[in-house]
Amino acid sequence: MAEGRFKGLVVMLTGAAGGLGQAAAHRFAAEGAHLVLSDLAEVPLMALARALSEAGAEVLAEPLDVTDEAQVAAHVTRALSRFHRLDVAVNNAGIAPPLMPLTATDAETFDRVMAVNTRSVFLGMKHQLPPMLAAGRGAILNVASAAGLVGAGQMAAYAASKHAVVGMTRAAADEVARRGVRVNAICPSFAATPLYDGIADALASQRAEPRGDADARFTRRIPMGRIATPDEVAEAMLWLTDPANSFMTGQAVAIDGGLTAV
Ligand SMILES: NC(=O)c1ccc[n+]([C@@H]2O[C@H](COP(=O)([O-])OP(=O)(O)OC[C@H]3O[C@@H](n4cnc5c(N)ncnc54)[C@H](O)[C@@H]3O)[C@@H](O)[C@H]2O)c1
Image 1 (cartoon, protein in one colour):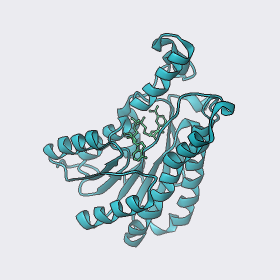
Image 2: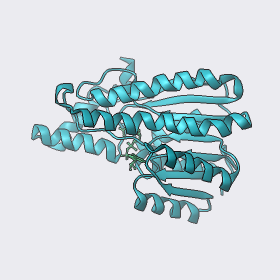
Image 3: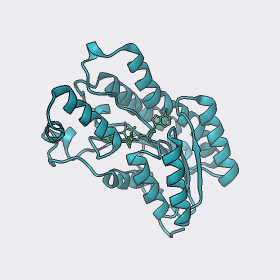
Image 4: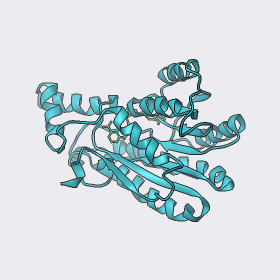
């Protein structure tokens, strides 16, 4: 595959079939990475893997549930037997329920959001760190959210899950900082993906208003006056995990059009 800043490096990416996942997979591949991809959604995952392989990338793709420790552990093991190294892991899989008041959120929804968004990051790092520490190098990037930095009304479960990702990122970064492994979090506001569409469509239907009005409710709070493209977020994912970005760890970096700056 291509020459590039990730040439020959092995990059593991969860939630690879989603909006941000697909954008990141294409960009890592274009920079020469070997890819270890997973998602709950098998059909789009395998289509992505085929497209990347046809373009010349080395790809291992496996459907899995990031909340299941045995599946996560087996995935890391198979990645190591195929590629014999793990350089970067992007823990990206996540869900967002429709906007709703905390008092209307049922406990099952809360538990599911915490499992997919937070337990997954714990399990991912638990199994990704040992091979990185053994090699004395690596970078983990956990995908949090602007809702992991500031409060987000109608999103209590989601905000709790993403604040927890930020806290866990800082703790893990401290644990491994002297052993060559960097751990950071990325905190996007809104980006044009199926996850965002789900939130905006549900809001439009709750309020019986056109989808454009729901979009405007989100963009009016963003100084740049728009949401991100998936490529803009993916570009930041590459920068955060690039071995050349070697002194940055324990950070929760907002990629949010200015949302959390004002
Ligand atoms: N799009 C945004 O506006 C936005 C903003 C801030 C943070 N994020 C975060 O970015 C990440 C990616 O989101 P996206 O916008 O690409 O969403 P998306 O819905 O397009 O993609 C998420 C992917 O995760 C997968 N997934 C869900 N549950 C899973 C599970 N249990 N096991 C394995 N895979 C599972 C889905 O199948 C999907 O392909 C998420 O963590 C999300 O919370 C997104």
